[in-house]
Length: 256
Image 1: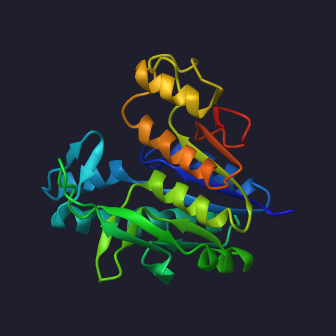
Image 2: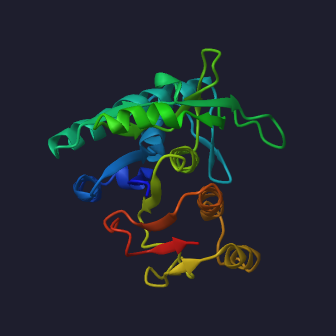
């Protein structure tokens, strides 16, 4: 029987909330067995870009990453956010290492082709080196992964953190019994975005199609759920979308 591994993705809103973040890291540290943390940081990047006079441009919730914004997200995601998380985890007794996709060649991607929108220096994942991650995990080290990848030609690319989490889970499902937890500022997938208690406890693929067509699921939740189903289809045992302070696997929405 494969050993259990838990991958937790923490969103940028939680990264900005010190109380929520501290609680999440305490809970993450208490998870039994092997684990990986994937983080966002978009709100911090927007804030720092603004202070530098760099405008943040978004299309359908996705960031346009021009050359100036690429410098900002590389500094913020790979440096400020990632290393603060590493320091906090070390304080909790978790021996962690921060990684971008370029480190150990762990996530290779290509620049997103220009279609209706030119997203700039945004990467779509080609491959995740699960064996390299496994070598760290088996050495007792917890990877903390920033949402940056590389194209193998010397270029860093901004890459969606939900996708990083899903692709990492898929790569590690070859070696472990993987649970993927998407943690954010809501209690789960909600029937009514204005009612925090309207949690949908379980979503199947047919449910998902229905919820998209009737508008129950919209905006950024659509790609999050698409990533969740992609993980399930590739052997990840369980995906949970839940509040950042409830990552024990018994709350929020379960994807089946």
